[in-house]
Image 1: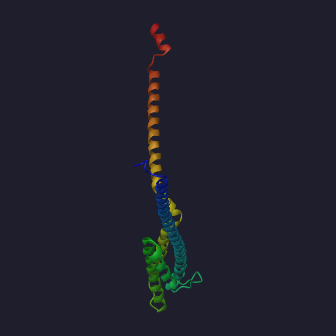
Image 2: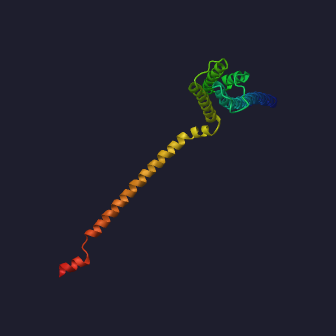
Image 3: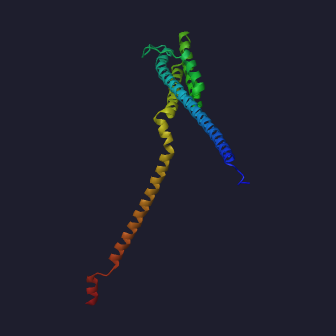
Length: 228
């Protein structure tokens, strides 16, 4: 049967094989190209999303830092107003304005749970001090001790929020991330110190034993006295 094949039949089969190979190569190339394109688009989308989040989070934390500075400056003036005293500092920044709501809204989307909780606690402490200022203006002042406690609460909540903010972005974050490594280094150094101390004790005990052996050996004078 093979011998019956003519040159034209061989040429036809060769053309069929070449055509099928070309079709398969094209299909494989198309599939690989589509997969690479899809992967590239997905990577670009993830990169764009990450860049968007970084920009919005950075702007949110800048707003949050501004609010911390404003509420601290405001509390230093509000404490004098709540006591009916002339303010020691000026000017008094606004604290209960639309910036509160803008910052809270950004924190709800781009902030962490600790940021939102501590920010709300700072706002509540500021509102308590603001209520004491209103009482003073209406002729029903609060006790100076109560005013001092309210002012101290505002500063404490602002300080906690600043620590939370620094732990996520600033040097405190590096300290927290390196805490486990430093703890391991501490225990490693502590173990090395224990081994060094044990070695020193062993060497010291051996030195004392040698010194005691030298003292217990008979000297030449002792031998001379015995000989005499």
